[in-house]
Length: 182
Image (tube, rainbow, N blue to C red):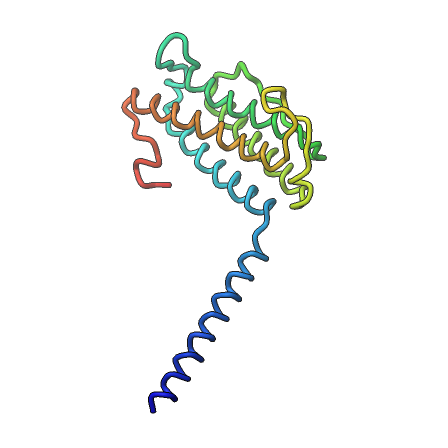
C-alpha cells in the first residue's frame, strides 16, 4: 500500500510540475515589450490626467517658490517632454503642437492628453523588434532604444507627479491617489 501511495504522490508531483512549467512557458510567450510599454503609458496617462485635473483652475499659476514652475507649467513640461521624446520614434502619427505658454486649465489638460495620445500612437506603430532598435534621442540620453525612451518618458513624468502632489497639498488639495480614487 505504501508503494501505491508513493507512486500516486510522485505522479501528482510530476503533474503539478508540468502544469507550472506550462504556465511559465505561456507567460514567457505572451510577454511583449510593445504591449507592456503601451499598457504602462496608457495607465500613466490616466494617473497624470487625474492629478493635473485635481488643482482648481485659479491655482494653475501657483508656484511653491518663485524659482519653480507653476502647476500649469509643470503639466506643460510633461506634455512637451512627451512629444519631444516620442518624436524620436519616427512614427507616422502626427505630433501635436504644445502651446508652452498656455494658462487656461482646459488648454493645459488638452495638451497633456494630446501628448500621451501621441506617445500611445507612436508605440502602437511598433513591434517588439522595433522597440529594441536604437534611435537618436536628445543629447542627454544619447542613442537609445525606443523601449528605453518610453520608460524614460514615464520616469520623468513620475518625477513631476511627485512635485505636483506637493503643489496640491500646499493648496489644501488631497492628491487623487491619496483619496483612494485611483
